[in-house]
Image (cartoon, rainbow, N blue to C red):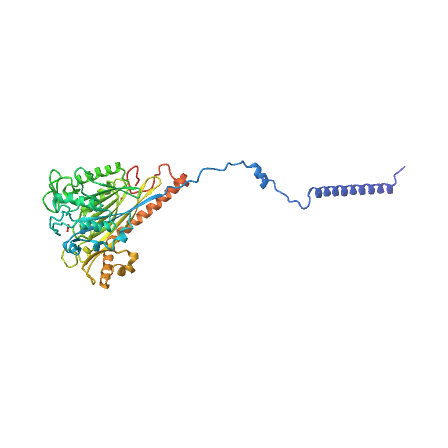
Length: 492
């Protein structure tokens, strides 16, 4: 019996239809499952390449270790604990015209010479001036050039003006011989002032001065025109003194002996606690406004020996300021003024053809400043000059010689401060310009170096306290003005 073709066709159609329905159902199921796996509103996060733990404030507080509060104070850089400024002025040349204007009753009063200085000098911690005369006493007639003998009252005038010390080593110190040197020293001390440059037998050749807690060693020497084999100098061309050891001196023909003596005195001062060294020296050539080669060589050697400040006198005119670098220790430098000029004299314009016009009326008040840090080290940090001028006048009164401190910031008040006529004021302004033309350039070099050295030092101390890792192991403190381990590095 044969099959019915119509029945076979119907069965096939049913099977195909059923298969299609199953496929559609399966597809729908797959789509539903996919949709169910991706929930709307939830951000998809890419899997990080590292495990990152995100901490909320609450979880962070529980996971970080608890730190105990520190009780140590923050580091404090080394800092300045004391400052000492020393000022020096040049020659008190006691010509008789100056002395005669100071006659007062039955004695002498030198107040007019100094009356305008006190306010300025008192600004400094310590002040020194050169006594270019001897005090041989009233039993010997008072006299000026060439052999000076002056009234004791000149010391009162200097003391009352604010000076603390007199330089007593110069070419006129022996004008009343050895007895005059001794008497001068005794009078100075009796009147409450210190002296440097001369001493009694057996005394030290130097002075130790404590200024605001800073120990300063001071030396003073004068040139001599000759010496005997037993160490008695000839001063100002006179016969040799009858006694050795009264005055500190050098002769240019034997500078090696001078350097040996200075070195020994510096060592003694250091052993006694000196933290800086100032050396006053009477040298050079009269009326020369530039130092000579001998002065330069001597200044270099004194710097090499560790002197911090070299302060010259004798030429009766101002000479330049210089910054000198040691050839032994390049980190050590000294400031030097080759000549302070006259503090007061009668070396006026027109009196002698030897005097360069005006310049012998000029002087310089030279100041050096030292600072001590909390680590005990002392540094030279400043140098400055105040020009001075001697106003000889008779303005509706007795004749006077007045030393005028020409402070630039007071320039508008000079005329009223010093009772100047218009002509006096013009002369003062010319004097100021003359002195600045000589000292200005070198002074600026000194100031720039000292300011930079201080800035470097302050940075070093800051890094030492806060950033020690910045400092190399071999690095030491920046350049200073001192050279010992304890104090890293002051003729008429």
